[in-house]
Image (cartoon, rainbow, N blue to C red; front, side, top):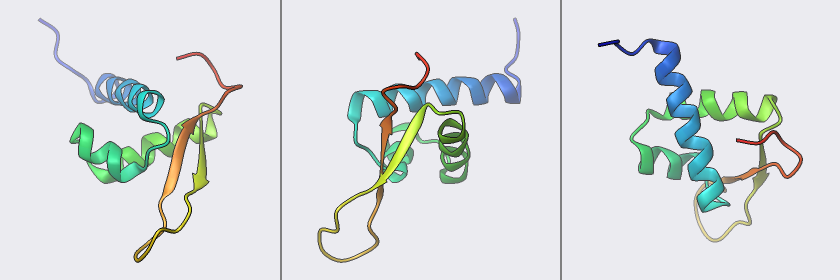
Length: 82
């Protein structure tokens, strides 16, 4: 039986995050944390890498009351196939 390595866990988490973004577009990083249980810092690192790699785009949401305006995540139309 093989044990998970940090890189294999990160790869699985990235796959989960990309699938959730695709299924629930638009969604925020906070929603990804809530639905996956992955730590906020890890979600942010993975999302930032996906943005840098051209897989995901981030757009500011419209303000709807009080509090911080979230950024919505979308799969890029011209990005790689996942």
